[in-house]
Image 1 (tube, rainbow, N blue to C red):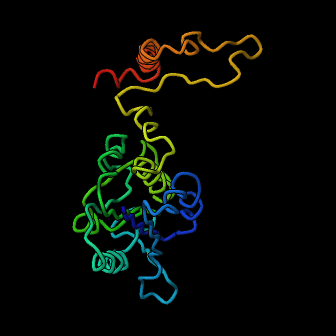
Image 2 (cartoon, rainbow, N blue to C red):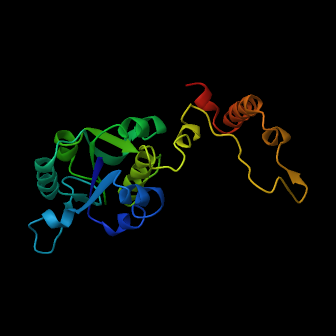
Image 3 (spheres, helix red, strand yellow):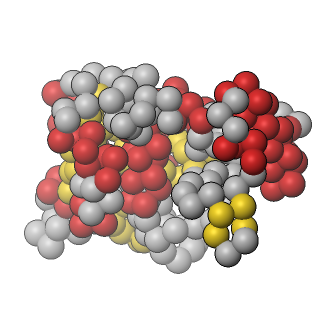
Length: 226
């Protein structure tokens, strides 16, 4: 069973997205165990404060190294971690390929950034991987952590009802998924492509690949050049 531990100073932001849908069902099935750890439980500050002003010039509060060190050290006493990840806007782009790789790991720890970030010494001495979900800045790393967790967990065997479903997702083969249709076959004069109703598997697969390539060329031509 996979174990994912998430360190955050705002655990409430993670409770809902990680308790429903595919991730919630995967937890219920015992496919993954997710621990959410409140960083404020590891501070000695009587007001449970875990941030302070940055040395030097610049506005914004920075998460302190001391409570983070305590939390990570405590968790590492319980198990060995394959990766300790920090959610950072300047990190490596989190992609489907990264999710695939992480889904094969046993134990993962994710540290959520917040405010202005974390003391650089945390990144220098504790973190093994840093990932960004896009070229924009969020208030904290809780949503990126939830997104990464979702992307990883849905790849675990048994997480999806159809084991082949994840293999057909966008980005799995470097292409965007072709358009999908369901019943009714005709609505307001708008018909589902006849080929999809033909029952001819080989022709359907060829059509979907053709549409997938065209869709990728239109929306994300950069993927075709990788």
